[in-house]
Image 1 (cartoon, rainbow, N blue to C red):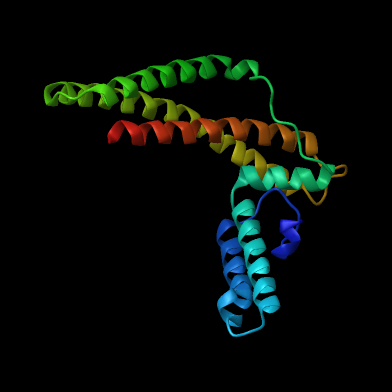
Image 2 (cartoon, rainbow, N blue to C red):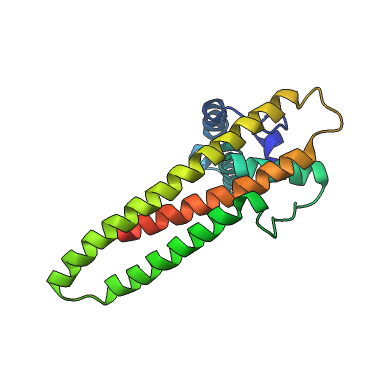
Amino acid sequence: MDFFALLHEPRRPWLDADALKTKFLSLAAEVHPDRVHESADAVKLAATARYTALNAAHNCLREPRDRIRHLLELELGHKPSDLTSVPNDLMDLFFEIGKEFREVDAFLAEKARATSPLLQVQLFERGQIKVDKLGELRARILPRRDALLDELKSVDAEWDSTLPKPLERLLVIWRLLSFYERWLAQIHERTVQLTF
């Protein structure tokens, strides 16, 4: 299914998130299942299917990583392959993140076993140090991710005038963005676990 066509958007790497949301809300209001609640079952099912498809399209296209993957699938005719190895310039950061995640996971396991209030206070203090370290890693990843988003905007600016389309460049952006987004999500998840 072409989510761009479903939301009446051109196939391109960059979309304005606010304009996309406005368009989605307008289209979704037209086909919302509540509008046909007294209709025949077939009409209700069709409205639900259309609304669900619009929702899936919006969820995909609003996130740059998912939008790029979908665009690549449409342009290439198949799902792009994931990055199987870490690029050399990311290797040090990869190992540093992995080490910190292992330490945080071990700490969380220790924290889960702690029953003494005194020990829990001590662990809370150590947990704050871990939160700070994760925050430092996040602060190192965000500029890299933001630079990729700027590059994505640059690719988008050339999209209509470039033939063939810069799909290889888009593929590199998607793969790196996938790494950064995955790391940021893992940092967020561990930070939440550390604060409770």
